[in-house]
Length: 414
Image (cartoon, rainbow, N blue to C red; front, side):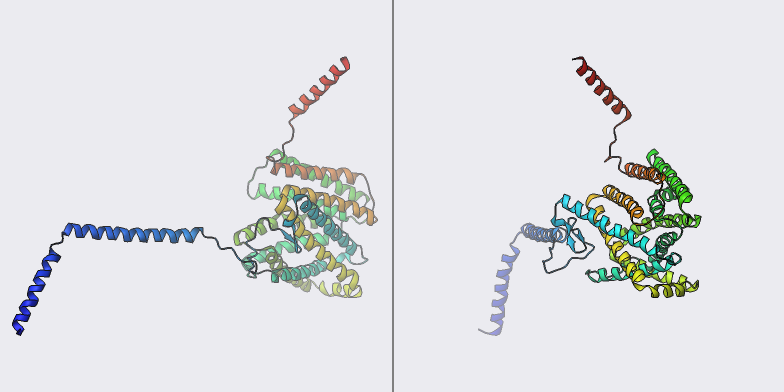
């Protein structure tokens, strides 16, 4: 076969093959392509849905060897000083928290008054605050090193404001003990509501209900009565102490809101807040004492009595640091209502022990004025928890008394 015949044979075979291709219906081909495209698209859609479901629903559980971030903890996981309270029932948790609050804060109050009862120490309240801030900074650093996440979350400018308010709260409070009896200082500390309400009225234009106003009135009357009793029988009473503790209360009323807002906004831990606020505050106090020439005499005095000054200050700071841990656990487990009740009872016990362990004049006017302050605290708690605390109305009380009287009358007649 020559080359020409071979080419003709190839062309013939190609022509015979083309009709087989051309014989296919274009509509059928189009429908097949659409079906194939739909199946492919459906497969892709299912795959996308599957991937999306995996992306948003899947939960990765860390192994026991892995440590979760301290900012992402289980609600049931409440650890205080290495003790996991979630292993106990509610009653045991409550008893442990109450015992911790009473034990550590009663020791804290006793040591604070013991330090200021030392002859010649009353003028060194700011130096005691400096030492206390140093110990708190060390405790906060140790606690932060034990956590997995060591990053600073709150901006430095915010910490500078918080540190300034913390210095005002604790420094002025410690310094006021050089001019006031310890029970008077504790009574003033119970009345934080008064500067909070005044700031709310004059700064934010808030309006308060009858229970809040009644609470403020009871606290104010109790404070006035207690202060008058102190000025009458206390030989070392000084209005300077009242001014100092009042300013400390104002700073304390502001710092709570600033701390809470910063911690919620930046999701910061308690150890971070303690470390940076107290370490910056330590710098503030150190600078202030250096500028006012108050650092040298304080160091010279404390170096003569290191055990009674630095030793007591260490225990004083340690018990205060532990006490606040139990208060926070009490708030987390049982809420602020029960926590306020426990801390109020602790303050009342502190005042009683102050009169028992330290010699000071006493009058029953202290008792009545203290009860007025306690009534104000109860009204304040009641106003914030009206939905949980339901007091009986006057009508129901009168009706119950009338029904009881009728039942007694019928019993006597029979």
